Length: 489
Image (cartoon, rainbow, N blue to C red; front, side, top):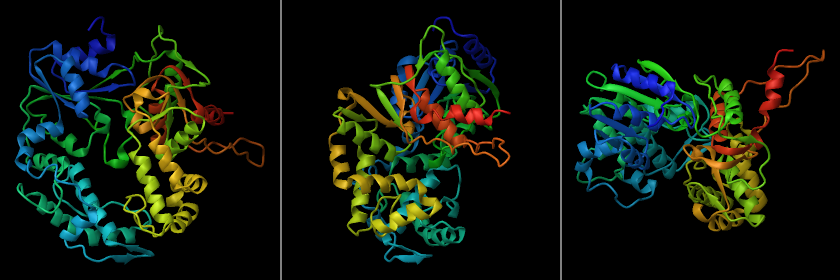
């Protein structure tokens, strides 16, 4: 690497001094390049734990031969997962079929909801998955998922009491390397390996994307401290996957804390915009843009990418663009939108669906009522609106018209799926809703605005930092009024 920054040099110095390191690396600051710099300046042998296989392959081409680049799953498979090879990649089967093999043969009623055998089977298998993602040694009721429509603590406890025995039976089934009723998946052998308290042979370990690490991987990583130097790199402000069990392991890490704040992706104007969101997220880092890069903020008529807050927002944008005659691609493909539309069609035709978000609703009217009147269901209202407006057949036809990314004029993505990506021009969709309008006290004094949720601020930060040359803030431009209202009079 030519001319490392002062921050990268400081990281290299502390690495060679033997410190355990936590590197806060902001958007576009060259975190993988920095880790490769550390590795090239030592003859010691290291292990790089990648977030996914694609990142591992890319890293293998950038790191010296002294570093083995793999995912945690790949290491677990080499150690123990291969023993379960004959159970891996078994044909998929409906959750209710697996549930039946575990003894789930009749539905139950909890509160005002009837739980079918399908709902109970889904909750059982989801409980096992949540246990596999955790650092816990024992499967307990805390791993039973919340189901929409069972909103009280008493209802959830009743669900947990029903589901836990089946989940424990499923986990016992998964210990058999030769045969079983439950489909054996990669997260299962990772958990089995973690429970064996493995020792990873290496002089140092590098953990990438540390802010979105599952607790099971965190546990594997941190227990190597006694014999290996630990280096984790990530961006706490990009911790956007807590809802599926990930944890920002950088918060509590015992080691030297350093930062990479010089972004090589965009210029000072976008860095300043990013810093406003970093302030709201109470993040531990602020960014500097590269002065030789010109990044503008303003309207974009033909963006390379449009970023949405939700899958329903992405559905809305896809349909709008298709109606305008554009060739549209969707990052990650259309399966998520298709499954939502099919679930809505089932409900509209009076059938219960197996979609995990909608599994407890008996018909479309049930979902409409829940979305309109129950605070826990307000985020489903956009789905109800778009289905009521367009119909499920129109939505499914739109999904079929999606283009591959390479042949699309414009890409649509959720902010979550855009993480790790970048485009020349980006537009923020309108489903990043503005805050409530500033209210005024009877005396005429300005009321303080509602605080911005930190998770929402982190998601906004991820979205806006995907742009290189021009950002249309669109649905996130409300930050201007918010900060004005927040300022002291």
